[in-house]
Amino acid sequence: MWISEVFESVQGEGRYLGVPSGFIRTSGCNLRCWFCDTPYTSWQPEGTERSIESLIEEISEYRADHMVLTGGEPLLVPDLIPLSQALKDRGAVITVETAGTVFRPVVADLMSISPKLTNSIPKDSNWEARHDQRRHRPDVIRQLTTEYDYQLKFVIDRPEDLNEVDAYLDEFPQLLPEKVYLMPQGVEPEVIGPKMDWLNSAAQQRGWNVTPRLHIELFGNTRGT
Image 1 (cartoon, rainbow, N blue to C red):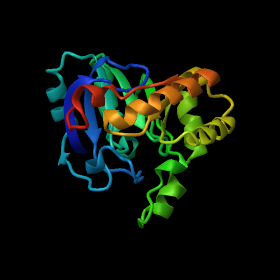
Image 2: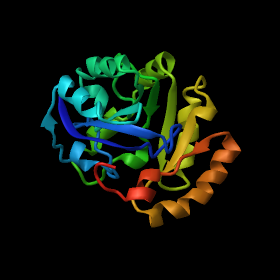
Image 3: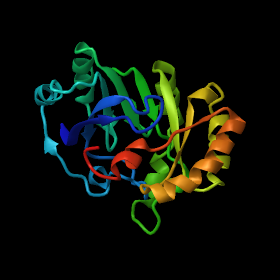
Image 4: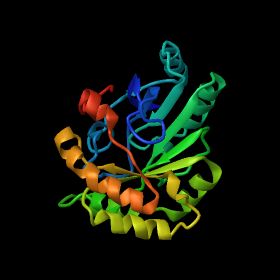
């Protein structure tokens, strides 16, 4: 499978914020969010062909028992099924990070879904129509949230994005508000910080959560962190 990076760090977002974790990042994505913070897995994908055996050997040196399968879009990769099973056989707690546009029957303790709102659509790009057509797959969201424990992380850029989150969740009344996280768009602390106050207020009113981007606070927007 095509892998862009493998590293050990801490989970920077969501339910397991701050938990020491190993990360396996696949390369390749079916979307092109304009604010993508890993363009080396989407707009300009790069990576190395790796076997499951070599990945397991590398992460065997890690102290963390949490493993995050991320991308790009990791659920595009057929070999994620045997890889996730091999990680579970080693006793790992597995999080899969996905945009929720593809289903694959992987092994996961937490399906971390980041649905893409209209604020993600790239402008002045030949990807604009394709991205918009692909970004919302209600059937996939229903299957992922039925078959797995889940969290929903919405990237919020402006206050008006919150209306779209309200409408999105109205489409899926079975989703639990306590599993919803708002996350500020941005890769610099000075951009993220000012958004946290109004995000916290909006989330409190609705029974949602807000997640900072701890890895950016700790390490900046750098690879392998």
